[in-house]
Image (cartoon, rainbow, N blue to C red; front, top):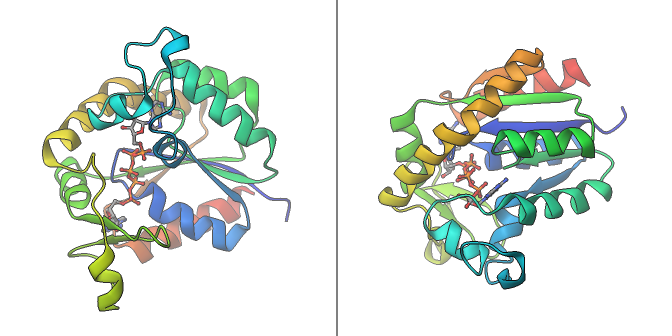
Length: 211
Ligand code: AP5
């Protein structure tokens, strides 16, 4: 099979990172994630770019969107180097969706649909392994190895206050993107409230049918 070009949409905590890891393993595509790319460049100097804040980290720690011109350049560069991919965290507003039209074509657009209180519970309980990047949850998916458990870290923007702000920003900016793909008739809605393995079955089947 030619490597598929996949877009995964969903609110903060919907499971985009969790399912993207499965997609990479199964379909041998690159994981292009703006969140990870920006976290790796939190201190990037934006002072020449006429932005409100001087670094991406200042936007992220408040749950706000990093300016489009910064993010568009990251995605354009990553897409130019990938054959197949799963794109996670972009587009987050309608301007970014229009930019993406000029960068590439998509084979499938997945939307993980999850209830708001479940999102808050997932994000405040999320923990990350800094050595492997693996994603855990204190209740839903704790690590079995006590050594791994001891080194887990919480993301700085996973406090309840910042999570609520991220969800507000999502509702205002990114829900219109979901409607945009729905109106185009390309959106594949998946019930993301299910357990991770059940979500994965739906995701895998949807990609296999579309690719
Ligand atoms: P980003 O890193 O993209 O964060 P996000 O979209 O808020 O999404 P998350 O990574 O928090 O959630 P996820 O859906 O991947 O969930 P996960 O699989 O980890 O963005 C961070 C910031 O960067 C933004 O606020 C912004 O400032 C900036 N940024 C990024 N992109 C940008 C852009 N395009 N433009 C401008 N700014 C941008 O799962 C969450 C938890 O739930 C985990 O603990 C997991 O174990 C658990 N879980 C997952 N699935 C299930 C399930 N089915 N059942 C139970 N638990 C589950």
